[in-house]
Image 1 (spheres, one colour):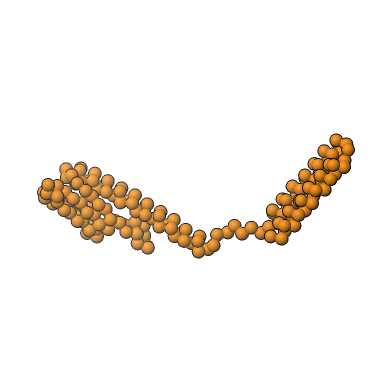
Image 2 (cartoon, rainbow, N blue to C red):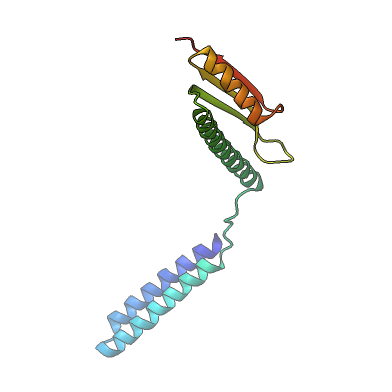
Length: 156
């Protein structure tokens, strides 16, 4: 901070000297030259004072880590939502191709540490019991035994 004070004092001093020279100097050409030189000195001293300061622009490590975790969690959530939506659209198309219409399809996923996003459970709501039975058989056949298939009927 003392370097900034010294710079401000030197700039003020140079300004006063410049005004005195302007007041005392009778010729126009010499006056322009002196003004140019003094303005140049003022700019150089300001630039030197600015660049000589040690500016701490780094973020604390804890803040960087917390923002990194926050961003990572956000990206994982968005990726999980995208996978769930894509899987639900796939299953809806699969059921419609078999002639079964689902009212609601929910897909549940998980992110284990050793792999990517994994499908864990599918929950499907049908209007009629016959559609529910056909849909359940189709989904279990396609998805396999490791994925839980939950089927319900609305009955309305």
